[in-house]
Structure formats: structure tokens, C-alpha cells
Image (cartoon, rainbow, N blue to C red):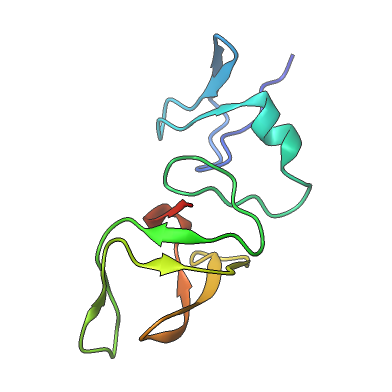
Length: 111
């Protein structure tokens, strides 16, 4: 049986423990059901390892500095109707008070 690579960091050194797959490199844990429920293609996980989908609402989990802006996106800011895109900043959205923006999924949690 071949184990899946880590969906977060892509490591091939995953192992199974009591029904969960675990990555020793980044510490991410996920279940087989999470992989089966996510449709083929782009897989984006929030800071807690929950899969994100188009149109989800998320909350920012830490203050984020924004280049060219006088302030930062504050922790707890809610962002609605996200779109998932390829790349390092894999969430495309509109943040109130800042406008269109790309965020990294590791700095948000699913509502």
C-alpha cells in the first residue's frame, strides 16, 4: 500500500496512525475521508488543515502587513466568498477596507 504525499508540504514520508495520515516534516494530520471529499484538482487547506472550497468564508488568524497600505489586516477579520487559485498566495478575495487581495491559506481558518 502506498501512502499519499502530504497535501500541505508534499512530503513523501507520511505514515498512518489510528486512521490518520501524519507528515513528520510539517506535522500536518489528515484523514482519508478529507482526501476523498475534496474534488480532484486544486487542494487548499486552512491553518487547521480543513479543506477550503470556492465561496467559503474565512477568518484571518494573525495581523497581516500589506505592502503600500498604511495599516494591516487585523486578526479576526472575516473574508467572504473566497476564490481558490494556483500559486503561493492561493486565496483570491476582497477584504473590507483594503479591496481585492491575495492571501495565503496558512493565515486563515474556515468559518
